[in-house]
Image: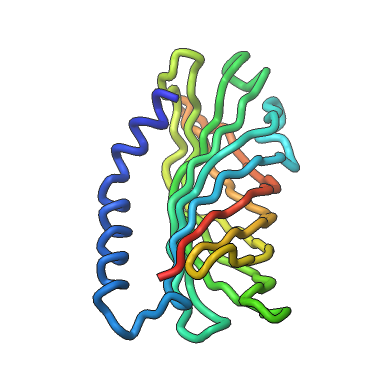
Length: 204
């Protein structure tokens, strides 16, 4: 988890931005608890393809922080930062290598209410600005693809558990294609996976 600590520290500016939005949410009377939401989402990730022709990924895990804002009760936008790790028994550089995907998410969201409470079926679709790092067993970063664009789609349930707190069981599909530099050549990396998670959130 050595590299995770480094990444968390490197993203303090993003966390400060979230804190700033929270403060604004309390001070700006136009933002109600139904409009602004903060969410933490741990999840389990199931690769649907090999990373490349010589690298097979095992089941991974990760966590994401999301902030969302609805312009109206059913439609809005979201943005966040995520970290996902995928172990590999064999790779194009040797055995026991971990691959980490980190970066930013953004997109639109749509809610379909049902029942007498504020429960809803929701959908999200958007982009990624992520990179993939190759980490050795000692925690050192061996190679980095650099950031690039990807995409994701997500569906789930938004279920209130109190006046402000909610949970969001969900499933998503992500796709990111990047290249690892290797001297004068490159190795392709196609990260495609299904992620099952549970978001725990707070409305402002």
